[in-house]
Length: 232
Image (tube, rainbow, N blue to C red):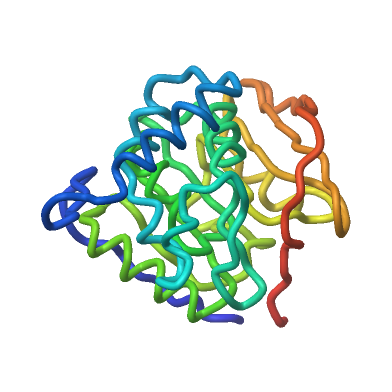
C-alpha cells in the first residue's frame, strides 16, 4: 500500500503574512478588475480572496513580474499555475462555504488551496509531485493558513479516510472523472473538473443530490495539464 506524506499547514486562518507593504497590490487589483470582474465573475467572496492572495508568491521567483498576467505560468515538474480568470471561474462554480470540507486534486504551487482556505472550513489538497507538495506546504505555512492539509499522493484515489467531501475540485485533467472521487462526494455536494485528453478539455460540474443521484453540466472549453497517476 502506498504511504502518503501529510503536511498540516500551521498558522492563522486567512491571515496573509506578507510582512509589510506589498508592491504587487496594484497589479493584483488590476488583475481582479480587468481579468475577473471584467469577464463576469461576481461572487464577492471569490473576488475578496483573489484581491487578498499574493499570487506572485506562488510562482517561481523569476516569473513574479508575470504573476498577474492573463495566462497560465509554469511552476516546474510539468505543472502550471492556471490563468487567474479560470481559477476564479472554477472557484465561483464550486461555491465553497465556511461549513464545507473541500478536496483539491492537484495542489501545484498551493494558490488554489490558499483561495479555498479563505472560503471554506478545511481544505485537503493532494499533489503527486513530492517537490511541489513540499513547496506548496512551505508557502501556505509562511502565509499563515492552518486550515489546509497538504498530502503527497495519488489524486485518482482521493482521500477515503477523510470522505465525504462537500466540494471537490480538480486542477489537472483526467480523461474521465475518477469514480473514487464521485463516491467521495457528499450528498448535496459539487465537483468541478476539466475533463478530456491532451489539449482542450471540457469544464464539467457534477452535483450529487440527497438520494445520491449525480447530474452533470458543462461550462465550455478549457486547457489543463493531464492528471497523472501514481505508481501502484
